[in-house]
Picture 1 (spheres, rainbow, N blue to C red):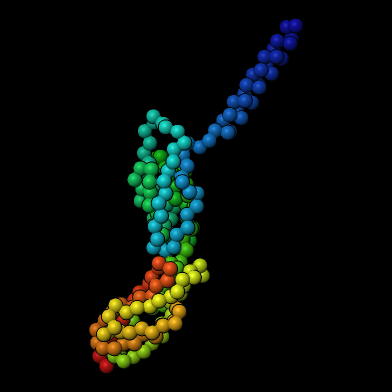
Picture 2: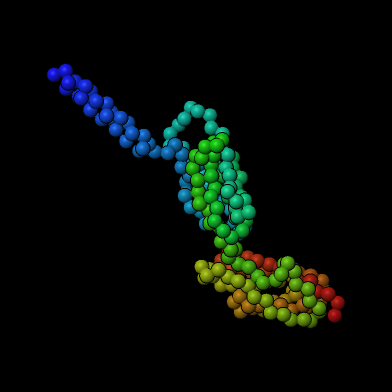
Length: 194
């Protein structure tokens, strides 16, 4: 009888430890972010919100960080942060409390959906010169492509889809803009002497 008590006690302790281990491994995280993935085009911004699972009396100092600000920057205020896409790539944005990570979001940055092939954003032409300019439109955009001049007294534009013929009318300057699906890209047309 005396031998069975230690064995029984050992079994009870082992069962208790096993139950404690199982409870520890299944404890849910304290925080989550309202989205685990975010896709932005270069220049776009998105909002992330840190969501606590339960109220806590402990003081938390929320700090948002980007593992690569060259791809996306993050500016946070408390539970909310704004992510701004800088260049193509992928980066992890984290909500931190000191050295402790609270939650994170994987951010993918794609090329801006509408771009125009004009180096340095300026096109310099002589009066009465006509050139062809092409825009790059992302595959996902199905809306019509349109072009416009900010002042046709200086420069005009005729187009068919992403291809445009830009004409320098007289000395001065104007802005040529291409639009598609709520996105736009533009360049400055500068007309010099004949």
